[in-house]
Image 1 (cartoon, rainbow, N blue to C red):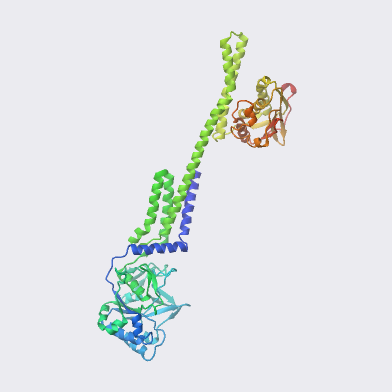
Image 2: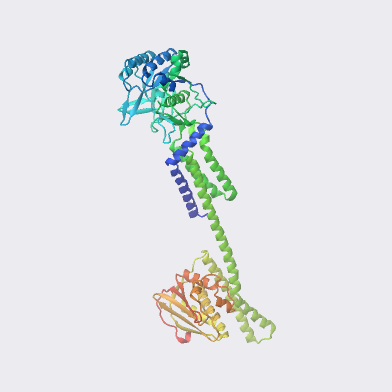
Length: 620
């Protein structure tokens, strides 16, 4: 492949790969990446661990016991008093305490919260960046707040938890993060890459919005959550049931479908939405167990995609056929397996970016190589065809001088000739041999010129002398058919180019005129100037051609039907070579003809000098 071909190849492969990379940033590609990650969650669940959290659930039976929300706060106060006796580490509420309660239930709940200690209350950021906080009576009982936003993705799937929310110049940590901090009795140290708590690094970058990817604890064999749950009704009826909360982080919230407005899908639960309080518990477990999954940096994804583009391009540049396609298939397989391999090392790598870039780059490289191979095959076939044409041309054009040489030599061997006749025949053999050698060289030059393997000679020469020489050489052929060649006006103009090739072109036009003209006709030859162009016209009274035949006259091996019926030997290659010669001299070939009225072939090439004189009749 040439330098320009390689440049085009790399440009095409790079453009295809970058197009795929841009497509991987679209919302559709992001959704596919999410689905692929969800599948990896289910395909490679973590080894189950003993949860450090538990849930005090407000289920349907509990709401029936409290008659809805009417007696909820008083019953919740009783349950918290019972739970506090089990000595949990932290109690985190995901229960709305914004509105004022009835009677003395707010005071009862506030007393229970104050007595329990280490309690975290919920807060919520409303549209317009305004915080929705619990009633002051509850804030007096505890000053710990945590936001309860478990924001789902566009498809309703909960995959991340925002660890911080800011509004009204006030920031609150997520309920799960605040619960962990309280349990560890530690401070949070912020960095641009994450959060440090009691020696634990939480990978939640500032640029990424402090999002934590939740590593959900997989459900048990029965599809139930592994995080223990006890309902409010069970605690009130059997206080011993609260012992499950000993040394646990207790999350209190609604699980009843009729009372839960924040139920969301998770990678493990695509048919049964999970209540928000349970999602907060899973977020806490992710932090407490250090089960972090970091998202691959965009720069790393970009670098990987560029590497796939480079490898795909190199494969088809160095190999072809089966080896190239086998290696390309392996590359695509690696691209599909890459997210899987990274997931096993706790790194979320997008699926579309590597797969799409590998497919696009490989496809483009393979298609480019296919068409390049087809082009090379066409070039090979063209060279083969040119070689066959060359053989036929040599066979056709060399018959005349070879016949003359053979005939002269036979006469010299068969008969006893006079010295003068022998000298004449020897001279003819010498002349035809030189002509044959010149014909071979001319043919080779034309072939190399057509293939772009040689440069055209650029020497000045007189066109009048070439025309006169060719006419003299053709006269014996014309006399055999009693055809009269008349050389009319022949200007003495100078042309710059290759003298031998131009002589071949003129000679070919003259021999064709004689060959395809009836006996006892005439051929007129003129060389004149027309608008700065030298015009060499050869007019015959031959069989002529139709308009349809004129369109094909320059095609190699094309012969008109009348020419084939005439019985004249020819291959149809001569005029195509004449056209090449004239074109390389910056000119053109004009043909006018009509059936039964002869043809006129006119060569038009640029002239350097205006006519100095017209050859006298004696020199014609």
